[in-house]
Image 1: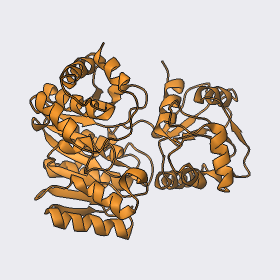
Image 2: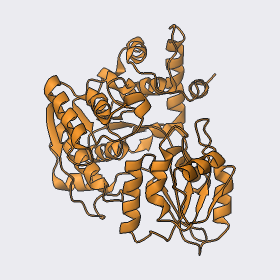
Image 3: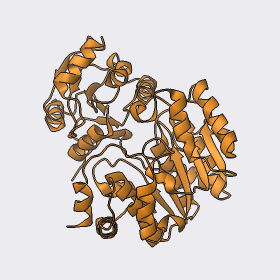
Length: 405
């Protein structure tokens, strides 16, 4: 069995809190995580955008950087970037085969995320990256990525997501995310976007651990400078610049070149092709993310001028995600991403109705995302844009269907 097939056979799993399994696998491989300096980025929203921007800035400075993020949208190779390129499938397969061979000798097999994390760090070692920029999966303290001893830690913000694992309160969530802080090292946190309660916990945890807390305000960057859209990206850009500068002295020209080269698909990404309807993809999957998306629609004067393809995971606050968008769209199609955790369209419609969230806009359902895309595309290029959101899994399916082969 190939390494990637072994990984896929592990199946979708919920987070298994704890570092022991990951540490054991890394030790069996000779601890590849010690071969590079690391920036570890936690947060409820924006951690992937921030990580992508840090990586791009370091590359602009000529610093060999690796990037590890999750989840992927279309192909698993997206999770590991070496320089500006996704890891080749053959390289990932080889390393995962090695991880599988090591894992078989243990009593407890790894989860999908643990296996990918170990593989990413081994790939970083083989590529001789100087800095690994790593996005936390869930939380921080007990996330597999926290096996690292980061030179710089980041918490973008703290919001209500994964409460069943990290909660039940925002203070609990903040405490888990602050688990990435390290004594005597920079702990960068967004100065906006978190509640006073959460900020108080981050400050307290930094003091307790002896980390050097830096509260970073949003950075004013023009659309011509930062490649990622949305006012909320100002906070992510600021954190990215601060994190990169904590690793190396960087001038403004280098920073601007990195910000303009940042690549992060599926986040306010616009797909335009001649003769085809425009699509807007965004991975908003919690209420804070949906409010940021709604603000972008208002700023772009798109409110009331887009159709909505919406779906997500049944264990998410889909009512809270849907609410800021409902009054800003012409009509709605509900569809379920291809995941066993996805909310069935009929069940989602009932949930929205029970919550009083169903708007006056026409609402229909589709059996699959592919059916919904076909139906919406059939209206032709003159129809208004379609906004697809609610889950990164849904965004990934749309991206696979709508991107040129």
